[in-house]
Length: 392
Image 1 (cartoon, rainbow, N blue to C red):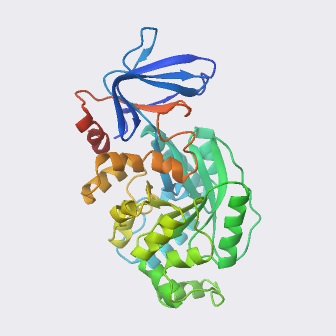
Image 2 (cartoon, rainbow, N blue to C red; image 1 turned 90 degrees about the vertical axis):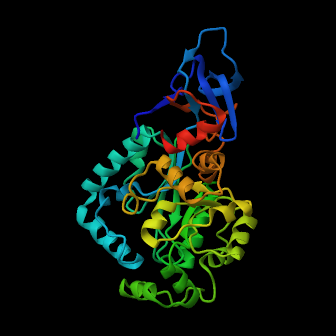
Image 3 (cartoon, rainbow, N blue to C red; image 1 turned 60 degrees about the vertical axis):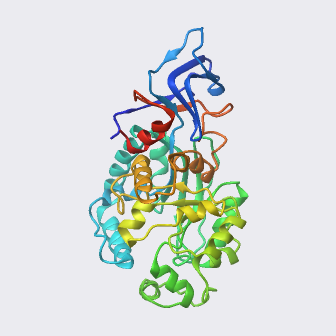
C-alpha cells in the first residue's frame, strides 16, 4: 500500500531555487492544477503555477504532487499491541487488558514497535502527526526520524505533574488530558492552562464510549466501578446530568486551541457547543467501529461548521496507522461526503487541528517545501482524488 508514494522534502536544500513539475498539482483538496509546477526557494513554496517552465526543472511524471498527509491522533507507544486485544468484550474490559498488556511488554518492546510504525507512517506519506504518549517514550523517535507534528504527553487521575512543554517547528511537546471520565477537573484545567501559556494545542478524548457518557451523566455504571477499583476518588467531580461535551465546556476547556478527539456520543446541542467555541475536532472512525460498532456523525459536524481532522487511534484498536486507509473507510461509510472533503480531512484539517496550518496542509505560497508525489497515469479532475483515496 505504501509503494506508490515518494516523499519529497526540499527543506534541506535551503539555498537552492528549484522548480518541481508534474501532470497535476494538488494545491489543496479543492484546487487541482493540470500540468503545473511548484516554485521552491529557501525551503518554502514561493509560487504555484500552471504550465511547464522554460528553465531547468525536476519533472516527477504524469502523476500528482500533493500536500503530505496528517494523522491528527494516534498512539505510537501502543503499536506493539496490534492483534493482542479483542474488540468484542466491551470498552472497559478492553481498556483493562490494554493497560495490563502494555505493562507486561516493557518499554524496549514498545519502543521497537513504535519505531517501526514511524517508518510505516513516513512511507505512506504521513509527515505530520498528533501523537499521544502516557509513558513519554515517543518524542525522541519522532525527532530522530523526521516525523513532524505534536507529541502530547498524556495524564490522567488527579495529581498535577511537573511537565515539559516546548513549541517547535518540527516537533512540539504539549500536554493532553486523557478524558473527562479518567482525569479530575483540577488536572484537566491545569493541563489546559499549561498548553495555553505556551500557545500549544491541548488534546483530550471526549464522548468516546457509552461507559463514559453513563459515568458523566450519573456518576455510576461500569466506569465508576472501574475508577473505584483503581483507587481514583471522583466524589468531588462536578458531573451529573451532563454530556461529556457539556461537562468539558463548562470547565472552560473548549476553544480554538483544544483538539477534542472521537466525539462518538454527541447530540446536536453538543455540536453547537463545539462549533461556537471553535474547538478543533478529530475523528477516528475505524477505531470507533472496532470498539463500539458506532460511527461519529461527520456529516452533521460539517453542517455545523466544524471541519474535522482524521486520526487512526492506535494499532491496539485499528489495523493500520495509514491515513489513506482511514479516508477509504470514510468514503465507504459516509456516502454524503465528496472526495474533496475527505482529502481535506487528511491534510489541511489535520494541520489546523495541530496548529501547523502555516507550515503544511496545502501547497500554497509560504508553506514549507514538503510534498508527496503519487505516481498515477490517466488522471482527470474527476478521478484524481478518488484514486488517491482508494490507493489505486
